[in-house]
Amino acid sequence: MGFFSERIFRKKAQNCAEKSGCIFMSVRGRDILNPAMPVYIELDNRFYVCKAGKIDELSGLADVTEGVLVTDFPDSLTRVMNVNSEPKFADVMARRQIEEEGEFDQSVHIIPYWRKQRVRNSTDIFLTALPRRTYEQYMNHVQEAEEPLALYSLYNVLYEAVKRHGRKGPVAVVFQHGKVADLIIGTSKMVYSANRSKAFDDTAGQFDALWDMVLSDIRSAEAENRIRVERVLLVSWIDTRAPVWKDISIFHLASIEEDILKIGGKRRKVSLPGLIKRMPVGGSISGGIERWAFSLQKVILPLNLMILCVTVFVFILYFCFSGRVRAMEADYQGILKELYAGEKLQTRAEIPARYTKVTGFINRIYRASRFPGYKRLVNDLTDAFGAQMTVELIDGSYGESGLEADVRGLISMPFDQAYRTYQRAILILNKKGYRVDKSSFSTTISKSHFVLKLARTIK
Image (cartoon, rainbow, N blue to C red; front, top):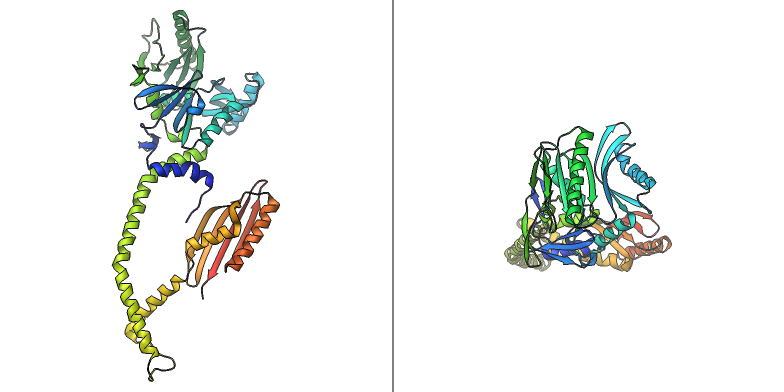
């Protein structure tokens, strides 16, 4: 029997259980997001929600609740860079290098997507850098959401498109929205370049120049890495404009599969929401608890069905055997009357051989009825520790002589108060008939952990 912390069950898992739905699907051994879930998108400081075949604009981050949030992270930069470090330290060295270059005037957080070691102490890393304050704002929103919410960077999505379409050679994935165009060039195993180009205004001439910058970045990446980009894949959004390149005969230009969605009463062809819904759950930058909540939703429905089937089976067994138990109890009472009544009763009566198995079974039932149940154990622990305790695990078993239970939990109090509470709880448990066979207590600044091995013998 397991107990989890209040944070996980009350805010995440309980909501999953109430819905009994799946928030992701499995494709070719990978867990991907459920197409029916709402998708929130932040681009150019504007928020949108894609749901039920339409796109609506939102007022801000506070309107983002459950599902998936993809953001381009305001004031962030994305690039492929080389650092003098082993791969496991590449994030730290990249952050230090960006801070030294003066790109940000505050502490920096790094979101890495890909690392590859060139030689010893030389690693290429593809990353997004953003102010730590901005990153913490989004993570706090994800953690405080009542429903599971998966957070992705925009370049998470674009890089996934590169990996999916770049299995046969280098491809360029371009996403133009607002006054900017995001570009990634790579294969399923390699990233050569990533860049964001910006136009000064929304005039036609500026957009022509913007697409020329994108084409120039592709040519530069080809020259620097000695590769040839044979395909350029366009990701579309509600304000995407088609490129105006004059000569693109050397590579194939195509749009990634688009969906028709309504916005403001008009139909638009867009491919970004479809890309997002094919994202793997493991690619989310949300914390471990949020990913666990997503995974929990996958098993809630079959788990509920299994519990229902077990419950029905137990009730059927109960009704089938309750009549037999009553008949055996009546026989047992009759045997007792024969044994203890009459002048011929011996001082030490012997039970007839034909009833030995029956009486043994009844004795075991009678003995088991005196064992404390899980409910009694939980109530005794609550009386002993009070509201300050959070039980993380109770593992109980019944033996020949009584109940044995392993209890693990934490006390959210300062150390001196927590230890006094712990000692008082042990005394109360002793008075209630429990024997403490093992005791372990450890503490941090704000909370203390304990492990108890309890036993209660039934004579």
